[in-house]
Length: 381
Length: 195
Image (tube, rainbow over all chains, first blue to last red; front, side, top):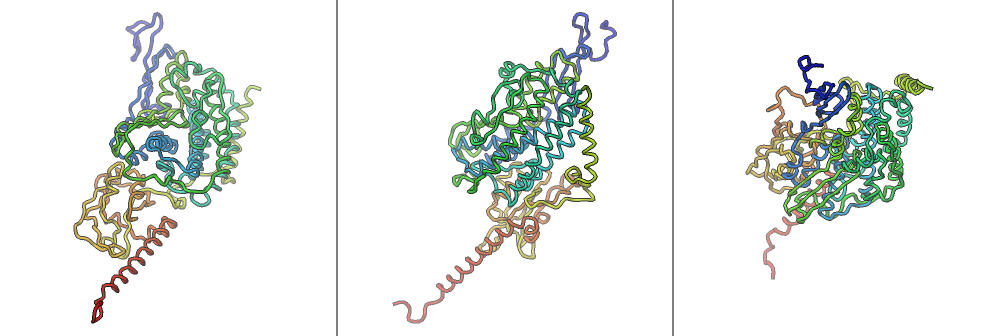
């Protein structure tokens, strides 16, 4: 095609091909929020991709440096708003490291139960959205959200809110479990495997799904490690790294569970790893709900207000549903942190997007982005 | 066989569709404005101020200590102290708020004000139909709008309210007993006095 007849958006030629720059987003339904991909296309093939983010920047870190330690807890709910309880946990862990508070046994179990329920929510929502990106409009997402709803009801009866839970405190949890909560959770957990079976029979064997995902967006293990990718995405590439096993934080050292691993690191592996992780989470939940001890839920040394940790620094990290969620705090002895930094798993997993998309079609880029599992509240903070 | 997976998925969808007519597990939609779910005891939306007795402004438990104002993460509470004191439930003189405003457009329903309040004066409400066409003054709630009776609080959070009422009742009994003891001790000495 000659330059004079180039379509609008044409950015020049690459030898005999005309390249086209397409700005996907920030209001594109496949970008899961306000995220933009600057894609350069040769025909339908992606030759260059630049992720652009920052549309949802809310100054989270600076607000936290102004607020008291307690005051940042409800803001962490709003990082990754699908899994607020794991965000609470990561932040509580960092402050507990900084102040040297210990967490009573019962509170550790409650945290594990809530953390794993959050993982179920996140992975089922992700599976639904991923299939939605592939064109399975509505149905799988609705089934996934139907199950998520049951867990959100549990959260509401315990923490008072469905999504913005604000439940964990430094040295324990805010309130004890209401009567009957364990039994309700048990019944939700016991019915979850049948949902997973149903979900898998709905789509995992589907030929269109397999054709769309197998071999698409492969991420070699070596590249994943070098890019700092963590969580299910790293494990889908075959690297055995799960912070629940590596650090054994909380009560995770006591539970018997396996870490599922993928082989090729393509979109199908990333989808399957989430389904398998949900099954492992159910195992952890069964054990935790069986063994949960009685006792206090707060460290007696913990205080709610006027927390002034000694000068120092701490990094608390957990295996969030999306990857390694870390909080880095520096205290100068004052009532608010001198420096507060979040290591968001979605952002760091997103940095490798271009390498996964090169040479694929633009329709596949949408699916690859869906399999990364991003939440823009966390990417932009 | 090619296509078997698709047929399998169709069967699953059909099962769900048929199930949605008789199985409550599969029919979970609530027709919201007509139907409403029963409230959950722990649920929280926006804060309100608790008062005892019949007169809202005289019975406010708030002592204008401004702890909630300082701790509120998005800084949506605004308090001016009234220098005229009033007796609280145990008869101790306490300050009271002249102005107690909460900007509901800023409030993020975290409940930290409730946790830090040492007087059980601020609690979380469960109302959720709050939309208004005036987003500035319409959402700036003054203490008159915020004040709600203790009976309302007991309806929302039964367990918590029962605990608080029992504690306050006990405090009041102790205060009355010690006041009676003090009154007895302060009685004028009998004629003749102490030797």
